[in-house]
Each structure stands twice: as structure tokens, then as C-alpha cells.
Image (cartoon, rainbow over all chains, first blue to last red; front, side, top):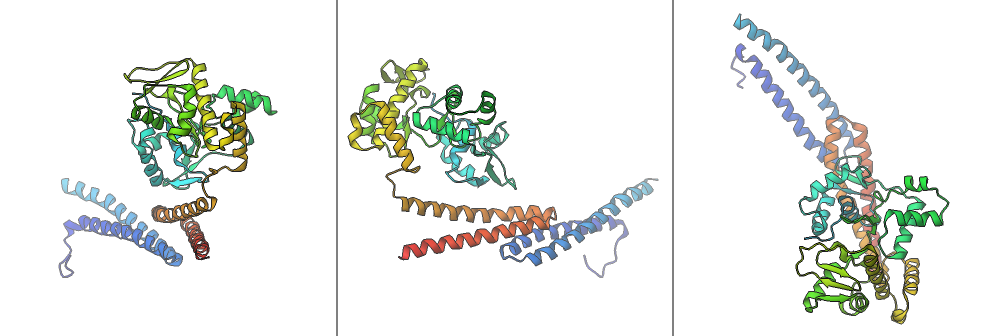
Length: 80
Length: 324
């Protein structure tokens, strides 16, 4: 998304969903990275990677929770 | 058309070579595919493995990861005794015969024997479909070779007496131990002293157990002679058994194979096994990573280190021996 462009409020949940899927892709990428690190015996780097993974997972859960909570309400609001 | 087919559990046992305790799943499937002529026709290698893992007294179980399958067999002197008994007799034995023998020569009670003698788990014992008797995994079936010989030479019948000569002189079976099980094979009909080549091979041959045992005992002695020296050729069955015992005492591997070569092969197998194990680790790393299990990754890396050191050491030994 172009940074100049203002965020379209109707698209906010789609935008978050896009962020979630980007994070998930990042996790997937980290798996390959870990395999490479394992092959080159970099235990320390794997540990850092694992911490990062945990952080990303928490963010994903929070974002998902946000979408679940507010998207339903906003739709209710529109119907009303 | 009936052919000797291993039971599912026995197929898996045949896959493991002596000394191997665990194997990557993919390796087992590959080896099972090579054994396909002894597998039940309707099943793929993968299906057979999955089925074997579900058996109540399965010889195998999933290892630390699903990608590794390991033997469940726990050594016990009672099972060793059963193994020695069947090996000495060089003919398949049913559970009742084995138990009677063990009862005679050990102090174990019936109850203990029944509880401890789980041949289903022991990789040294195999069974064929439709035959309750236990065979040894180290025996190779001579059925194909005998059938081929008879067809090639236009013979439709074979007396049990002449099997002796045939197996030794004409077919020249390998130094490895063999067994002939005509009653499991629609290509043969055992009648009295003779074995007939079954032309209408869809017929089912049903022979009294006694005759079949005679046939097998006869072949057993034949095999012993093939492996023993020429002088003992005309001896009686009891002496053949004696010769076989000697052979067993001397060596558990085949006598005629140079030991050095065998050891080199085993070392080669060890290296490839370790390499395969290391290759399989990447899958495990991913699953540990997904579970955020750093300890498991660390353990796995230690294992990898050890494997690599071992591979390196074995290669060094082999190359230094070669250089000498």
C-alpha cells in the first residue's frame, strides 16, 4: 500500500488481515531460516529466532482478536 | 495364485538389517518396495507400514519423531532360547512346539513363557500368511529357485530324496541358509514322497502336516550340507544338525564371506544411516520450532554433532585402513 494514500476506514479489517497474513508468511520463512541455522550449528541464532517467533505469534493473536471483536460489531452497526 | 507372503508384521521385520534398531520412515518404505513380491498384493508399502504400526504386538513403533520408526523388541533369554531351538531344528515351528521345548529345557512356567514369548515383536522370527509356524528371518525361501530349475529342465515332479542332490549340485544355493516351503506355494503339490509342479496352479494344495514337515526337514538337512564340507555329504540327518550347530557356534554371519569385507559394508551402512538421520533432522527442527521447544532443538543438535563426529571418525578409519 502506498504510504501517501490515506487509510480507508472501511478497509481497516482487510488491512489488518493483510498484516496478519504477512506475519504468517514471515513465520513460514523463519522455519526455513531455522533449518539453515541448524545445518550450520548456530544454536544462538535459532534461540533469537524462536524469541522473535513467539513475539510475532502474540501479535498475530492480538490482531486476530481485534478483528474478531470489532468487525462483528461494526457490521451489526451498519445493519442497524 | 498362492505364493508365500509375509504377514504385515514380518515384512517390517525383514526390512531391518541385523543391528539396526531404528530407521527413517522413508527408508523403510523404500526397502518395503524392494520386498514387494512378498507383500500382500493389494497393499502399498506405506499402507503396510501404517498397518504394522497399529498391530497389537507390533514389532515397530514411532520413534521420538513420526519420521523415525524403531523396533519394540526387548532382548530376553527365553526368546533367545526359542531362536536357538528353531535354528537348530532348521524347520519352522509353531508356538506349541516352541513352548514345549522351552518348558523342557528351562525353569520358566507355562504362564511366564506365555507372557514373555512375544515372537511378534522379535525381528528374528517371521511368519507367512496362512501358516501359524514361525520361520527365522535369516532363512531365504528357495521356492523360486527350485521352481525355476524344475521348469527350465522340463521336470514336473521331484522326489523329496532327490531334493538333497538338486539343491546342492544343480541349484547351488548360496551359502546363506535357505528353506523350502512348498505347502505355502501353489506352484507345488506335496504328495507322499514327491513334490509335483502344479500345472493348474489355481488348485489349492492341502497336505497332511506330517508330510510337509518331512519335506521341510529334508530340505533343512540339504541346506546344512550345502554349507558344510564335502566329507559330511553322506551322513545322516542327526549329523547334519550337528554340523549346523558347529557352524552357528563359529559364526553368526555366513562362513564363506570374508569378514573384513562384511565389516566394511557394515561401516558403510552405518555412515549412510547416520547421514540419513541427519537429513531427516530438518523436518524435526521445524516441528520443534513450531512448538517453540528450544530444548528439543538443542538435544537434536547435540545428536547431529555426535553423528557428524561418528561419520568423520568412521570415514577416517576406513580411509586409513585402505591406505595401509
